[in-house]
Length: 573
Image (cartoon, rainbow, N blue to C red; front, side, top):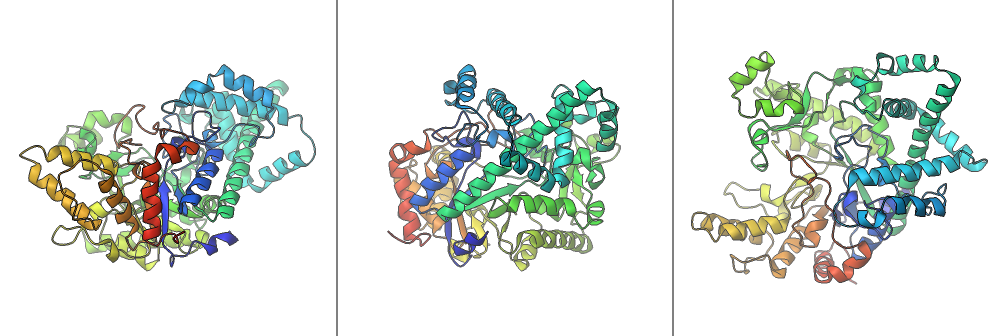
């Protein structure tokens, strides 16, 4: 971490790019962005003057492929790994060619991410590498054994959990498993009863899942080294929850509250489906049992943060509001349709009187608000003990209680600034020059429309008599924030408008100003629509490989290069 102090001081403003790792097309990727692609992206971005890459979570996920539905708080998702002999030394070139040809890798490189096919191919490549590794001797084997020993605090139960999932027909819902597999103690007792053949086969599975995480840790630490060499910062993401069927809940059920399902209250910005508008977002993650966690001084959180800080320079804390008080449901997401159009009274009849609410307390009284504030401050102090100052970025968006931002500011934890939502008493957008230095400014997160979508929607509404005045006002307000009020509106999304958005954000006072990669290129592609179900989420890939961007998006890239230099986020060449 020595190098980060050279370029990660809030005294110097930084420009960055936000992208899901899955969305980028590296020179050698096989259907999804990976560690090798990320290093390639960092090299490209550094040459343009960017100093930060922000990615979404890269922990291992469940079958829905959402990067926020984790089956481990520490283990890395195998799809993020570069599975070629350059990055996977145990894999023979002949095996790589044979397996990728079998899976039709060229077709997987086109279009959206095809998760089922990509995962099957990557697992076959990792299995082939592991088979070769089983024959290895010497230093490499000793490194692997050392890794298992050093990471045993979380790895031992995780590998057992993953082996049991494979043993049970790859069913990730551990409540479906036999009783003797329902917890670590019973599973180890069951293991002692296995025949020699079954024991050998099961131990091979355990060793295989250990091996995958060794490969993952090795690759991700190599990514960190490459970022350090480039003077680039890598921002990771700490999701607010983990899956109800995660290795964490299986191994330590006592530190979770499985009776409720976490989420977020209704927000005006999300109009994707009737349930979300009426009740909010029901994510399905169990709540944390903070009292139980406090008994060992929050060892689970400390372990998680330490592991992340080995790779990431900065960490975005997802839904930071939830550490003060969390919106939650008395039903699982699978039951949402049943409640969509019910009144609170009708819902109570089904749940026995329970409704979605905030916990530990609502903010209906000053005493409750103070209780929630003190809880959030205490937790973030614990987090800071593991990360150090100015390394956590709090995603403080949504229904923000009045005490949240002052509490974060007192702890010198940067929060988010989305210009559309930072308004004064007269409804005008606050000037970017008024933003606190300890903040991250962005027009959108992965959950929001792109700037092109916003603009094109306003322009379309400006053609309708009933919405014309409001839409033109929206355009003028944003252009005023960007310092480009001379642009005549309504108008289409022109290069002039695009340049206004890019420079307007970089000109703000925030330490970190980050554009989504789709906004850098002026695209309409969207990564996630909250509440939507299907393959539209998390499958988008940017058109063109990284090596083609300078030609494919030549003018758009030039806008960012010039804006970074003009706003002092990188010295002029």
